[in-house]
Length: 337
View 1 (cartoon, rainbow, N blue to C red):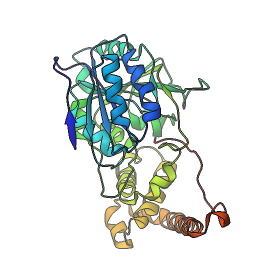
View 2: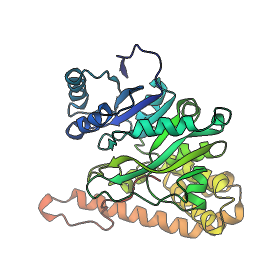
View 3: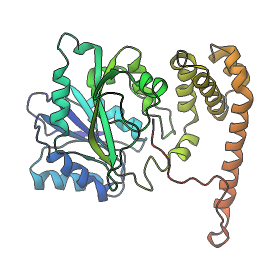
View 4: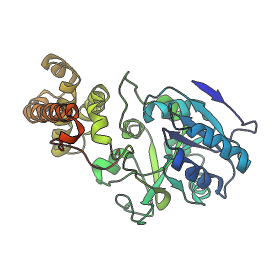
């Protein structure tokens, strides 16, 4: 990994972290949205996850042309979660704002995030991991997911997703010191880990202040993470085995039977995909009755995954003129939650 720093000023309030992979066509638009911020106490940190389309070179030209300092890292392609870890480790800001390289910040987003963070009394701020709001679809202006129950709502990610069942990506700013303590696990050869892995761990000890305001514009791409999420999940069984093990053993315990059952079914599905045997499943699950309840449906889902993957491989081996859509071919889906 190569690092370059153009930052010499005192540490800023925000690091705007942009992980990117082959997004030269869209990256400059994201960078323009950062440069347009009214709040100026920030740094821009780009993490190039092994792009081959000149994304980093384009960003450096943009930096010189706009006279906008840009810090950057370049690493071998390892997935957005690994790029995120690298960026958090290199960030200088107190709060980290993650911006997708195909997304945009609204011009006053950092101003409003700073105002909201400083509105939390300093005596209570240590109880909070960050601030979050909403995103909207760039083209339609439609809200991504659901609104919060109040204009200002102090809760945590578990209450958000499992208690209130509020859907959608919820962008914001999170404390770098806490993100450093809770990095994404990285498994060799696996390109994906759910974003909420970190947020759920933070929820055990910290609150988040949710604002019923829009901070980012999302432009989901046909070849982006959101569109490829099912394929990425298939290629990341060890990470998802860990993710749903924590869901089953820790996070869903207080959130009803349906959530607990679903977590155990998903755990069985991905644990089997990772190569785990029944003894490993029995050893890893704390609640044996729930494991037994999820064993058959989880196994059936894993078998279906195997069948779909085999069908896809057979289709890929045919000459292009003979190919037909394989069962389970994936289209654009929801992003990480």
